[in-house]
Image 1 (cartoon, rainbow, N blue to C red):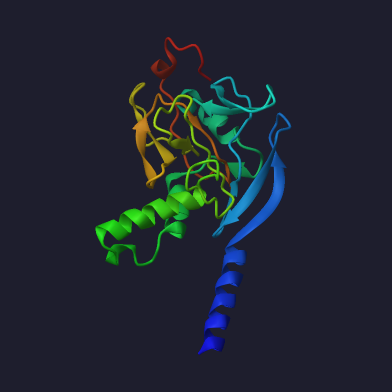
Image 2 (image 1 turned 180 degrees about the vertical axis):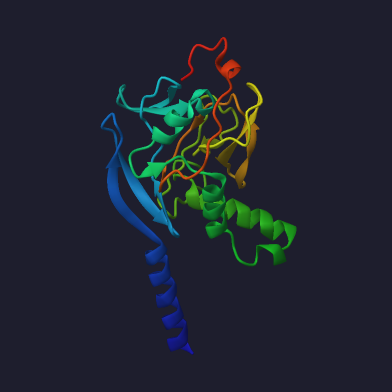
Amino acid sequence: MNLIKKLMSVAFVLQFIASVAIAATISDKDGNKYKTIKIGKQHWMAEDYRFEHYNSQCAIRGDNPDDCIRAYAIYMMSDKAVRELCPTGWRLPTKDDFIELKNFLTPSNLSDMSEKQKRHAKAKMSSQLRSTVWENGEDSYGFNAIPQREWGGNGAYYGGVAGFYDGFGGSQASMLFFGITPSEIKVEETSKSVLLRVRCVEGSFNLSVPQKKKDDCAGRLFCD
């Protein structure tokens, strides 16, 4: 029986190593370099994006004054700009990408748990992606999600904005975001006018991103 348990433990470790592995470093057009991480079948940036696009602003500044994590106004960008924001071979994530990542972290027996157990499991899922600079952050997979307190207000990490819209309906049209809070992981719609940090995912952009209407850019300082 002990041998079986040992073999099961070894098998679990091997499965973990196979599904979580560090990939090569990649660079953006500004020359910024990013670590990448493999979680399940996906390759993600292990750092927030710092490429300086004119539809972005500094969200968090590091020790180096020139090292700035940027937040992007994706809703102001053209189809072409959205597709070309990430390095070659990488793209902005879609809703399916976010859901796949969340599903990978979700316990298979979540639906059978009590409400208290579910809350604990959801907080555990969140902690696995949160940086250790957060209280109870475990960063089990190297995703290294850091809090956005400068202008998020609630300590939540708003990053990895989906690179597509479900429709254009003026400045308040909705868009998707991937949110990590101390209690859970969210994939939901938010105001189109919100600036969000970005995590690129490996792959080609096969989605058809709707083109802006001419009046979508009317009166705005920044618009492609």
